[in-house]
Image 1 (cartoon, rainbow, N blue to C red):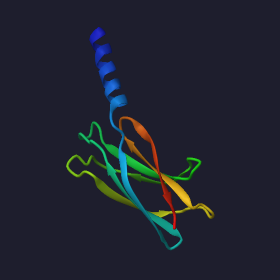
Image 2: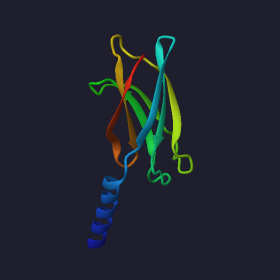
Image 3: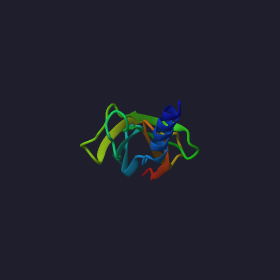
Length: 117
């Protein structure tokens, strides 16, 4: 029983101490009334057990405007860029945030602000 407790503690500690995905850069461009976002992430992916698995575009109140799921680890491709097209930005919004997630720690507390031009 004690060994199970120690193992559970180690797994939990690893998840809490794991570095979150870092947003290296974001490019946003309008396209036919919608927006396309190119986001470059860096994360210490180790394989299926721990990897950056998504990023999202949010308004400044935290409402999700678009979500890009990442289908697999990028162990040997760091940093990496993925795009999301067809993001509808409500009228009047001139700034959004981009937030990354990994499969152990969840959404990062870092939200990179992006001015829409």
